[in-house]
Image (tube, rainbow, N blue to C red; front, top):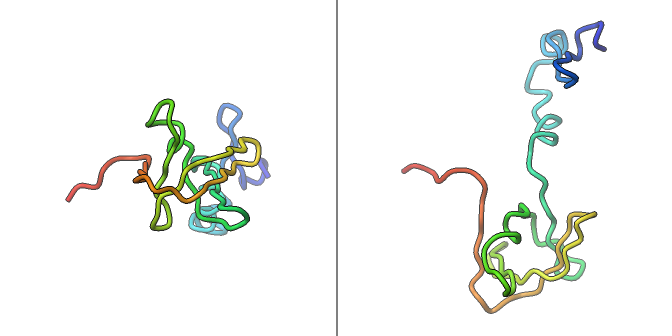
Length: 109
């Protein structure tokens, strides 16, 4: 694939090559490349029901020594067991006000 310019190499990193972009168009790679460029997300479960996904910064920052309460899917959830290997978080409904944290910058209005 390197010889055919479907892949390109720079300092040991592989990327989509010029020939592949010409043949298939750059938009064909957006989904594939976003998987590698995007942050790791954790899936939140209430029992067996999937609630949504959050970035780990959501439950690694904030309250120290107390429970982590997140806001997702229109309500507050208290984080319970975090499975780092499978990137899942078990949650239970919370009465406290949850906070949502997002990476990136604030939108300018």
